[in-house]
Image (cartoon, rainbow, N blue to C red; front, side, top):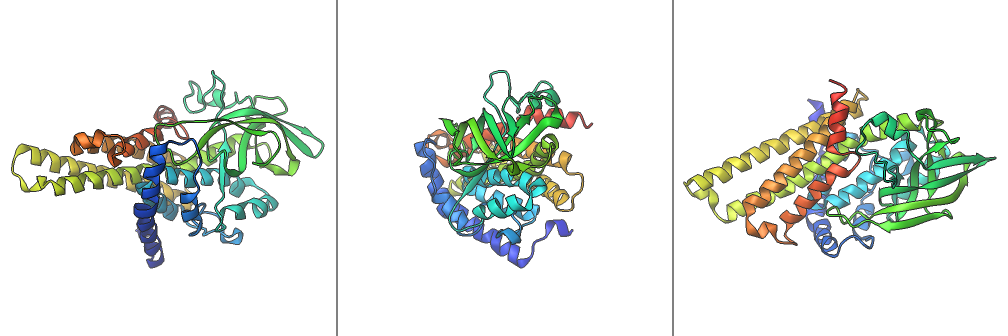
Length: 389
């Protein structure tokens, strides 16, 4: 089963990232969680940039590691065990580079991808969701229709494109070096007229409208952005009129990494609960409570392994370019459910200390809940899977 084995070099890298995540990243993450997410922080991005881990899927010709999706998912899991928000930053970068890698011109790749592979940290983002009260891409009643209701638009004038609109829930948005924005073109709401453009974050008219204060994932800065007559070269178009299919492909590929975040959170919460049980010598007792704790931990361990295997199956399908859309959605949905169940159960097993603000178990619980609202709610994923039955 080559899909589930690692080379010695890969094992060494996984161990290196695990050590980094459980020490330096986790320590910084606890501080950031305590102060909220009003101000972006560069300590964690700097730690990852020094190891070329902010966008490890970027091909070597642009300075990246060119890691497989399996390896990428394994590293995201390790980072998430230290800080789910830090893993969220890495995954947000991958969302942004996916349209570039799939459909971007060589010139765009050469100009922008190297920003994410230098030792000086840079981030990227995608701008897809919108702030309209009647629009939410993540909870559509009728998925295909709602995706075409994007109100942000682009008008082409000569060799320039003018973009107007407002986008919501953008991870890395305020500090991103560049933004991949999805808009409609030619004042049309047809799916065929959806289009991705690359917008440098320094472009006049790009304005951070609001910093979002989240319940969890506080170390990944999240904002709303307004685009007011933002003018970019026409050559910054990514793909040609295929924004709808490119959007679906971007989601399908990155759901796997979101599932890996869920596995990482679940693993961290489980190991914390296990450590508490061992410290309190619960396993040395012969009463019914000891049996309850030990059997519960055994169930949690089984569920985490199953979620990890689901993520790795999806990653393998992506690596070999099989039909990965369904298994990737399954991986994200199941890993999210496991993370939320494990973190809730861990708080119960730890007891009253786990409910105190600032305790790691309480942070894991909030971070896990946030996974339901990134790149589609559980409702949406069930809807998508149901259409394929």
